[in-house]
Amino acid sequence: MSGMMAFIVGFLGFAFLLTSGCILYFKQIDECEDEKGSYKVLRKLGFSQGEILKGLALKMIISFGIPLVIGLLHSLFAVKSGWFIFGIEMWTPMLIVMSVYTVLYSIFALMSLVYYRKVVRNSL
Image (cartoon, rainbow, N blue to C red; front, side, top):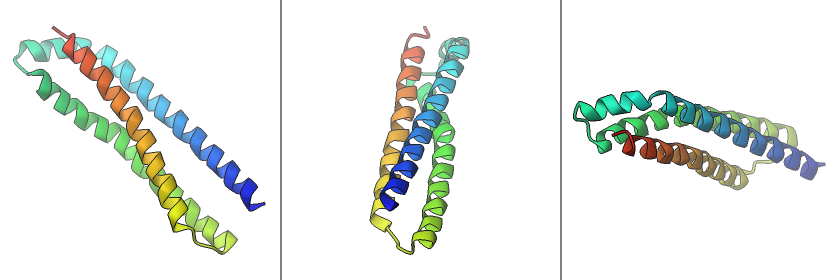
């Protein structure tokens, strides 16, 4: 029974990760396409590609960081309630899963930043 519950919870968590990561990624791509003109104006005003990308990196940290922190806190509270139900504490698996969750979420953020870099590079 515990194995089945772990599989279901893991599968739902992975599905949530992929869904939320993809939604944020495609939202960022859509915003990038809408802001192409702004990057051209910024480049003509004298902003370097590096300066624009620093601002975009900060935007990625906020856009992906807030949902990541909320997701990690949610999983922490869910796991703590599971510890109460099952009567055991499992710190190592929880920390491993949270690390993997952070790495996978960061990949979505990096993919967005790479796309932004391509658009900014082509803005002139």
